[in-house]
Image (cartoon, rainbow, N blue to C red):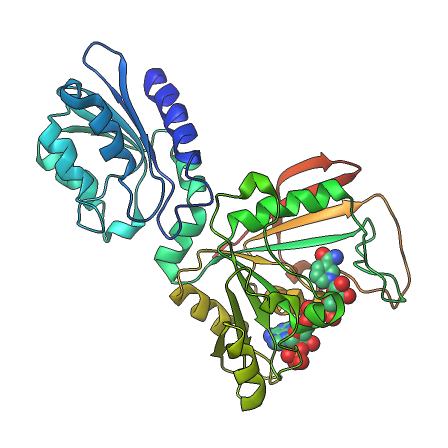
Length: 369
Ligand SMILES: NC(=O)c1ccc[n+]([C@@H]2O[C@H](COP(=O)([O-])OP(=O)(O)OC[C@H]3O[C@@H](n4cnc5c(N)ncnc54)[C@H](OP(=O)(O)O)[C@@H]3O)[C@@H](O)[C@H]2O)c1
């Protein structure tokens, strides 16, 4: 078992090589250990249309795959997509054993990939470093199971939770290092969403500019604007990355056309009870467009709607060593809020780290249901 776990750790490292490029596919890594005990093939998935990790590792191993053990972070697929099924490749290569990290909910009911391998007489060991392997593809899994993205809400504030001073100034509360770290969050996501208030106030570009992520696919920029407040001359319409405007039937045809003329996609979403863009409706629309990982970048009103609807999966707070105070200075999350106090969203801290002079606090929503 120790050998299997060590091999799975290596397979996880291999899977990471596809980071930021594989969506809407999962990250997968695999290796082949021959009958003699040598690693004779390694593989990982590079993105849609390219070989699966198992196929790449088997191709490197060649005839040495006969009787070998193959270690995969994810259950091998058993159906034709853009590439042939990995189960067939494993069976035809004559491997003796397959070690699987996580099962693949995308393959349908049960675990058909594992069942097919066992049916062909291959010994299959499951759940080796299962938690780590599942965590690698949490957004993929969420999307497969619910049709909606996994939602990460990011906020940058002073230690007392203020995102701007009472006079409206907000640049910059956190450090250059914290803002550089946000670039990684953006590169992870399939889409980055902000409210119309943030576009009007800050005119952000919402792109990934850090050269370390130059080879990742650019996240879609999503603007939530119920009535057409945002001008088509805003930076998010500069054509440097795909842009989608989520609006309602309250926006004029003229504004919709102006947005569309910039190349942006405009989607009319149902209104919520306040007449604004329905956030569950937005999540459905983004899920249909294969958005698996969604980053909510603010501001407080949009964050409030996500929190009120219990629609956030993970919070990432960047906290500056500053206290701003002031009743009129905005906090991180507006909206109606949860009442009484013990009804508030329960979180589990996942990570707390220093980023330059700031703190980064990562917390996962703990759901009982
Ligand atoms: N520190 C940070 O991390 C951070 C991040 C982002 C922004 N900010 C700051 O936050 C400020 C802007 O925040 P904000 O709260 O005023 O604006 P916001 O949350 O960016 O946008 C709110 C607006 O979005 C529209 N909207 C449409 N559907 C909505 C829905 N379901 N729920 C909520 N809003 C919906 C509404 O306008 P319509 O009804 O007109 O559509 C609403 O007024 C700026 O000063 C910016 O600098 C800080």
